[in-house]
Amino acid sequence: MTLAQARANRVYRILSVSGAAAMHRRLIDMGFTRGTAVYVGGVSPTGGAVLVGLRNFAVALRSDAAESVSVREETEA
Image (cartoon, rainbow, N blue to C red; front, side):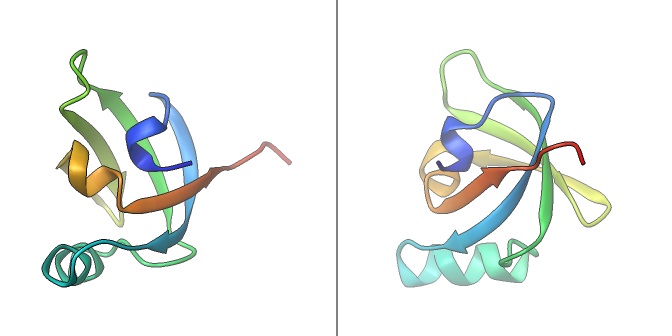
């Protein structure tokens, strides 16, 4: 599953980041690294952007960037 497919108001764990070199580097620089927990705060109705919270900040990712981040949903323990 990717962040573009994620549902709002859920917590996910990043598995990997892929994509073109420039986009990959930018996502890594913003803190989208393997093992990081991310909160999906919302998804635009048209699917154009995903609002993500991580490492004490929020960022709206375009759908092409969100497709580059593979995640798995965190479960309650």
